[in-house]
Amino acid sequence: MSTAQGGAGNSLFARLKSGLNFSFGQAGGCVGLSIGASSIKVAEVKKIKDSWALTKYASVSLPELSTDSREIINTVTIVRAIQTAMQNAKISSKEVCSAIVGSGIIVKNLSLVIENMKDLQDQVFWEAEQYIPFDISEVVIDYQVMGKGKDNQVEVILIAVKKAFLEQYMGVIEEAKLVPKIMDAELFALQNTFECNYAVSKTESMLLADIGAMSTKIVICSGGNPLLVKDAAFGGTMITQEIQRELNLPSLNDAEALKVSGNLPHEVSEIVARLGHVLGTELKKSIDFYTASSLGPPIAGILLSGGGSRAAHLSRIIEEYTQLPTQLMNPFQKVTSESKDFTEQYLSSIAAEVVIPLGLAIRAGDKT
Image 1 (tube, helix red, strand yellow):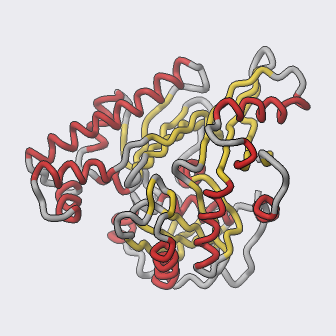
Image 2 (cartoon, rainbow, N blue to C red):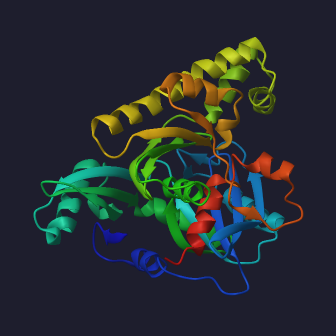
């Protein structure tokens, strides 16, 4: 990616830039660290010829109010959870690839008319000022050209991150005695896992939706390129909270158990269906915008992931609403496992939640 900063250079930007290209030492693996709204997840992978193998994994739940709109508000809790996850997974490497999400990051698709590509960066910066609700001097800006069309049209993905937000994430990682060698976006980690497990086509697109606790990351991609990206304010916790409220259950854990149950009570089925249509509406908006804007080839289907995707019958509800084939992403369709503890039953149990940390770990090990 072409990287720039919305202000004078400082040590933070230097640290970021110096870490964009790196390789891990022989002793350690490639580690992805996901700092989520409800849990900390770590994954270690190893490259075997042209494929990847998951060697270590662990997830640690977070108490409520550890993050707010993914801004870290309980540093001590997050640091301890990161350390516990690394210990539980028995990961010795200190270098990690992590990601920034939430209100401190903006990812925007831009369609620009550029007569001279030398003017691209200036045009991107000018456009950035129109879309970024922060002082431009307070952000780090990154962008990548995704394609060129007729009449000097250039498709660009713009990423802007608040420096304070970035420092906060990097700070807790460093307090956990780790080295944040790469800071990525979870949207791209989602695509990494997809492309390592499914055939990449240039004649059709796929919609990926990772349903986290507080938000859903949406990527429409084709031919290895993210053609449309969005972070929607809908998460699996909303379904869980609604089940707890309407059924007057004593805890969110009781509601979560009902949500993922294969034999849903009628009242729970209605709640999942109702909120499933809310998510379906968000996905349909993205699909309609993508189609109307002629951003790429037709969408062949939808792949769901994230803890929220485990809500019983949700994929069927989304399929009915969007009229597109919908199923759960299988992160182990081609990615293998090298631990005797990773039984088929265990891999199935973590499949929904491992997608983002797995994609980050793959990014860490990708030297291209």
